Length: 350
Image 1 (tube, rainbow, N blue to C red):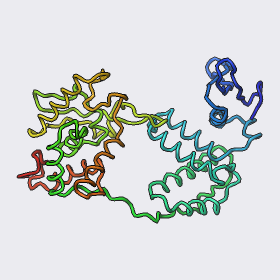
Image 2: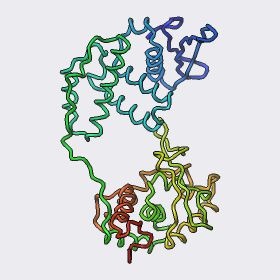
Image 3: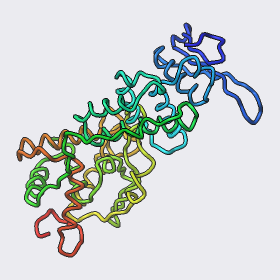
């Protein structure tokens, strides 16, 4: 790693703040000035990785000449650019970063990009067929993008990905199934027999099954999103995660079509009112979230999913249903409905 004073940028330890700093020069095109930029990190390794990414982004020729171009750094620089230009969300950034970190621990992931051959890429991809097709595709895409970028920047003359075939997973693709009518009826009757103390996510499950919400949409609901007078629910946000995997409130739904206003079924009305009362009296709930833990800002989707699986397995011996299946159940009942309208009752008579 370059030493202090180097035009390539450098990493040093700040004794006063007990932090590792990555420092580099940034040229201002408009003013012609060169300014020193510094970013601090807890560990030396984090600071070095950040500096590498910055150097490749700025195409520092001296740095590249001295250190080569590790393939994972090309991937990181590309990913950071996508985040900075709003082409991906922080959630996607964090997910792909974890993929790159896993790749970096492999022999091929620690190589410079001009040292990697088609055969090496193919052997590596063939070795991860125990993963899902989705995971294999993500790794393949990262390789593909990294080599295309390297050719465009003049780092390489040929693209080794031309001869690489993306293998298929040994796993079967998971199919999200809906609850059957009988299963939905039994599950609904069971959770309605419980109070919120014994089944704290009861109303989340009901909202998903009878309004068709994603679990992240249900967990993002506030009392302000409920129009009791007109019996409407405004869906306009979703819980998501930042680049570090921490749960945060998003400012939009998963896609444009996700923003919608839905009617509240009559039978569901009292349970939504009940949840609003909980929200209004709950401590540390300035946002008035319908579903909020006392000891953290937001409810984790995984906790809701785990509780659903526990109930279904223990009470009904069902093991292949997730919270997303509840949304899928709603859609399936809509399709099954003779008149093409969504079922808004407790299944009976629909």
